[in-house]
Image (cartoon, rainbow, N blue to C red; front, side):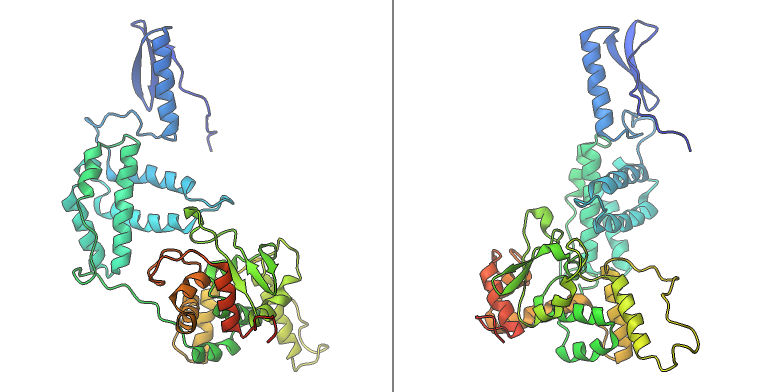
Length: 399
């Protein structure tokens, strides 16, 4: 594999006495060689080239070989992979969603000139997405990503500004007027189905389900929970996730753990402060230990208990594995499949019925969302009262 060069393009003298620099095979003349003006022009061009992340499209004229949609997509995805990262340097799920939309656009209009991507071509992409059976929310999200692609290309001076301005005239799909499939409404899972599913879950996953039902936490917040992020506030515990859905908007998140929820999580808080509370590896060890305890064959007969080396479990649960585990348990319990997000909706339904919509905003960490129906700033005190109410804890900390 060739070694990547970090050298800058050379400021050099042309045969005509002009200073010049070559970027992406294109020679840019800077003025009289050695002059201050030529050096300032050199610094400007090289700085812009570096700002474009050494884009192979920088400085390439569009008259002879117009830039295509696929060339823009290639550069845009490279930018997305470096931009959409959390504070730990891990790529967010936004990258995967963008890649799915860009794959469709590349298939349909990848070879077309970017400047020729008109509103009619944009509408054709929307029509194709609807014909694939995508929901209206997915279609509108893809529309926004395609617009952002061309907006980014304008900011990088790859295409003229009027291309993006024309695309902004294309409206989003509207509920009731669009042929796109309606958005699937997430319903709250019943407590009857939860109780029927729990016996078929591993012990740790069953506790995760119970805890999520009592706290209304998001699946990702539950999977990423660390011991060091949980603190005692009076007679309750408050979980302050370092990573959550609205962090990039400057929001804070507080999840109150009270009453029966404390009894569920207490055994998992004895580990190192930096560990994840719920570990897939420890869950597997628990499952193997439970199987050994139920073993009928004596230990001196047959195979002795040993770890399954073919399975490499992580030190934490991820949302996908958590969801799949519940789905398999639903099949064994012979109940309608439900997802972890439905637990959150079940909590919201109970809180709204007992304490009102403002309490829903406090418990679920909403500040401006449709499910709460009002703008409500997170209220920790109200969340503590609500958590105690739904977990059976009294105001003095006694059951």
